[in-house]
Image 1 (cartoon, one colour):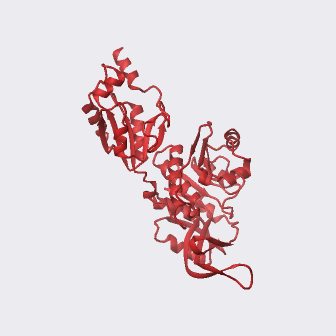
Image 2 (cartoon, rainbow, N blue to C red):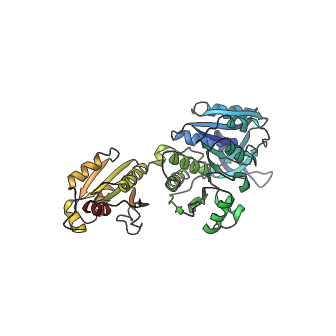
Image 3 (tube, one colour):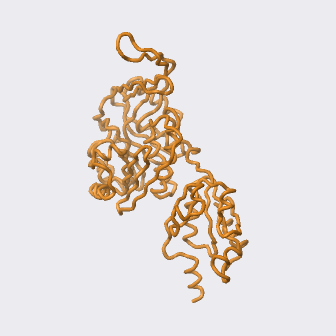
Length: 417
């Protein structure tokens, strides 16, 4: 069970028509049509996770006001396990006035800073070794300077943080995800070298910096860097996009993906989300990148092959694998190859159980097959680059790191010895 802890909010949207100017002041008049309510802050993060089938416990604090009752009502039918303190008078509420064509006219906030201990005490009582705990901090009081240290002292847990305060509040966290504005307020203009020094100073394993339409920067404490960016058709509303990024990262990591692969999927999902108007939770369909393709000889199946194939399987809905025919293998690798004929190689791959289709192709490259399949993603080992991967102009290319000491050529040499 994953725990979400942080500032609970209520988002209220007043939707209407704004086509007149007030005679009393130079401001628009909004003729209200209807109102909608959404969960915000840590509650929105919890809803996003639950919406993609992650079991969640939600911790935080709400007020004793009607807005607090509304938060509980919205959580009622979500299957999120709720453990909220109610020792505030006022529930943080953000009201947005939205006019014609989704234009945001005004936002006003009603809030009370939380100084209580009941919220964090509830979480401490339910934290166990190896738990994933997500901190959703909006600087409304539930996260103090001692919160991270206190949680880490209880058990060996993985802490994922969406920050809003000074970086020292999050020392020791597994992953910290500021947006670019937040990061630059800490450490100036983003630079990989300085970012690495900074995250090491704060003892973070991963630093993920989101830059809106400019993508996601992914850096770990060993200095490994990745950058992901997706093209968007049209930005309708960025509200809640940060919660979607963190939700998908945790979802994918919990499913066994690496942090870079999880961030790549999160970038894709967030890009889809900003094309929708309003706070719309992420769905499994948003994570569905369709057909994943990879290809190779697969002469003697080894650990490197299996890791690449399993990784490819996690990236989309349907995995299609291309296998070189016997004739094409002989042309590419010589008359002594393949060791196993094409039908045997195809059958071995099919026996793995997670590959949806295996296709034998006779050409030296699979370009014609790729054109027919029309994959969304192509996965290749790191002996390729994006530019040298066949079909790179038709699909997103994911390069998977080679497993050292595992190659068919090496295996054949050992057998001959």
